[in-house]
Figure 1: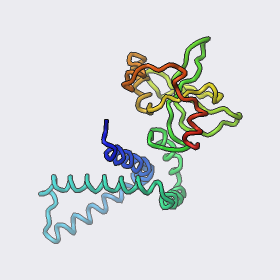
Figure 2: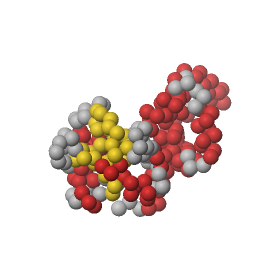
Figure 3: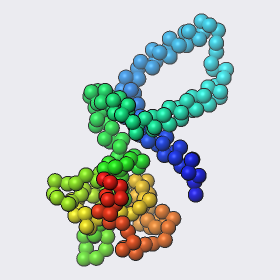
Figure 4: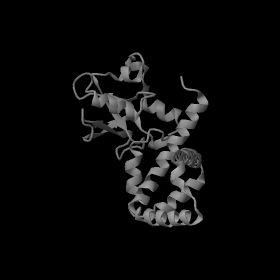
Length: 218
């Protein structure tokens, strides 16, 4: 069991990372500026007689520490209105909203009505269930229905979307996007219980979507 402080630190870093990724992606598009800046900085270093290449390991550690620190600060800022202000500014950049949405698909640290849930829905045969994903817990155009995505196995880059009544959706708690990906890639060789390192549960022991929405105020 991970130490609570370490778990909090890693989760906050993850939130900062996924807030930062769309911005980084946009900046990469104009990365040719980096070359110009590097040339200028290199000229300044040579002019003052400093050779950073002689201390590569030290610089690597410094960069890693600074990067983790920035991610932690960003993860903390995500919960404040300051992050909303920066996001409003970046949303004016063409393509940012689309990139942010695509990156957000893989973010299992989201909260509220936009986090990724692994769910079980009543199957498409007379008995059984299918395991799928809810990328958002916002109600569908059909009242009391929610969108569930069932991905293909073993290549999960395709699948189907269904509008399912909330009474037919059961939440598999503690399961993440990554767990579902492992399940798909194994083609069922590894069960979800094995992936989650838990014992199989009775269907009545799973949390209904309605209960989950109440508990999480979503």
